[in-house]
Image (cartoon, rainbow, N blue to C red; front, side, top):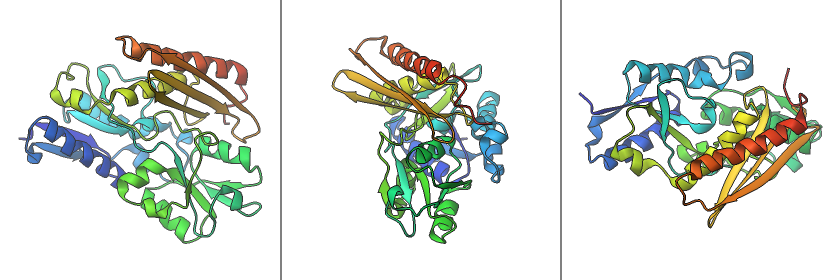
Length: 311
């Protein structure tokens, strides 16, 4: 019987990410790789490919079945893309570790054009992300946003075949799949503030199952602090598939700087705040990071009112 069972979605990206964690956890526990196994689980989000997630229940559709397997004892660890993890954890579960973040930027992919500014008037931009839609329209209100879902290979194929003038994807997923050669350019963090937690992974366990060597080995303190701040902002902004929300934290020296924003879905309005905390070595640093996110998020939410919710 395996010592550790890791629950994962079946997509190529999910398996690549979970495979990375499988090897790292086996090394941290000094276990042969055969004792740390991947358990593939089909989620509702994987089965529905023809609609935006906000129409069918939100991003929790990518985690629900895997979390049920954790609670039932069928798996011991779940590996999620952090940006897919809802703000509140189900009772009995917790995020035990957050590994070091990959590139948090969005990538621009196109067969014919070098960047967003080079797209023709009325160009077709493929994305299922309300955030990317709003940020793109803020810069190019003439663009035609077209819904694009499916795994990364499907999206890249459709871009290569000219179904869209360009598409936008997370750089982290392309890097982890070894598909970065498809990238024509990277969008600036300032113009395209990433989704909270973008580029980071979440290692989820049962609440009473966190006292393991792999937890300490896999958790990257600076990433965890930044993600805590970003997810604090997400909570305050009621971040979901129905709101265009960005948040990104950066640590320089002993200071964490967080920027968060909310946009009108059509890109015609944008509300943004930034703030800092210092002294990150204390035991309360995670709480302070989350509180920074909550504070800035509430300020943005108050400024935006009800103008930012998609209908």
